[in-house]
Image (cartoon, rainbow, N blue to C red; front, top):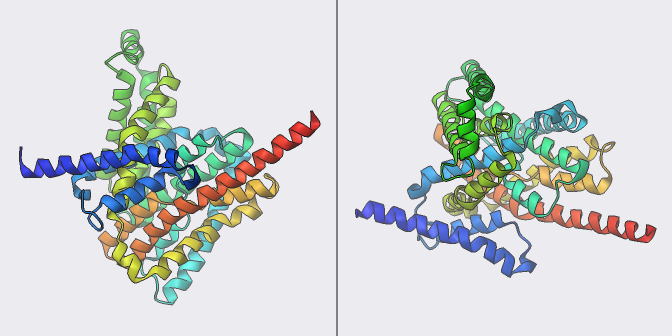
Length: 397
C-alpha cells in the first residue's frame, strides 16, 4: 500500500471518527445546545492542519464536494415549487430582493472605504440562507410544522437558489450572457430528466425499478445518485457552480422519483447525513483560515452582524401581516444563517483574485458563527412559542 493511499485513509478515518463523535458530544452534553453541524466544523478545525494536523483536506476533497452536492440535493428535494404560487413564496422573493438592495448599498460603502474588493461576491454572500444546513436542525426540533414551516422553506429556498443563479450569471467563468445561457441550458436538461419516467412507458422497466428499490439492487437510490452526479457534471461543464446542479437535482427528484418516495427520502437521509454531508462540514472546518481571522477579527464580527442586518431584519417588516412578532423574530434568525454558499463564494473570489484573503476567511468565519448562534436563538424562541401555546391550551381545558 502506497504512502499516499495510507495518508488518505488516515485522513478519512479521522474525519469519520469526528462525524461519529459529533452526535455523542451533542447528546452527552445537553447544556451545550449547539447544532451538530457546529460540532462537525469545530471538529474539523481541531483535527485539521492548523491545529492537530491529523487529517489533510486535500485527501477528502472529492467526498467533500459530493457531500455539498447531497446537502443541496436534499434542500432542493424539500422545495415544493407550488410554494411560489402561494403567499409564502411571494413574500420570500420580496424579502430577498430587499436584502439584495440593502447588501448592494452596504457593500458599496465598504468598497468605498477600501475594506472590500470583490463587491458582487460579498454582496451576494450577505443575502444567502443555509437551508441545507438548517434542515437537520429544523427537523430535529420539529420546527417545520404548520404554516410557519412553509415560510421557512420558501425563505430558505429563495436564499439559496437566487444567489446560486446570481453566481452563475455574474461570477461564472463564461461571462454574463453565456452564464445566463448556460443556466437556462442546465435548467432545461434538468427538466428533460424529470420527464424521462413519464416518457418511458415500458412496464417491465418500471417493474424492475420499483421491485428493486427494497432489495440489494437499490435501483431508485442508485439512479438518484447517478442523476445527482450527472447534473453536477453538467453544471461544472458549463462553468456553473456545482451547487446549482445539486439543487436542481433535488427539485427534479421530487417530480421524478417513482415507487416508495418516503422510503427513498429515508435512504437519501441515511446516505447524505450518515456519511457525505458530515464530511463536507468537517472539511469546511479544516479549510478555515484561522491565521487570517486572527489577523483581522473585526472583519468577522462585521460580516456576522451584516448577515443579521441584511438578510434578517427585512423579515420583521415584510412578514408583519403574515406572522406574529415572535415567529417573525424566529424567522429572522433562521434566514440570517449562512455557510455553504459563503464557502463557495470565498473560493470563487480567491481563485479569481478579486477577494482579499482576510475577507474570504472572515466571511466563512461569520458563516460558522451564524450557524453556531442564530439557529440556537431560533430554537429557544420556538420553544417559548410552543410553551406559551401549551399553556393557553391547558388553561382552556
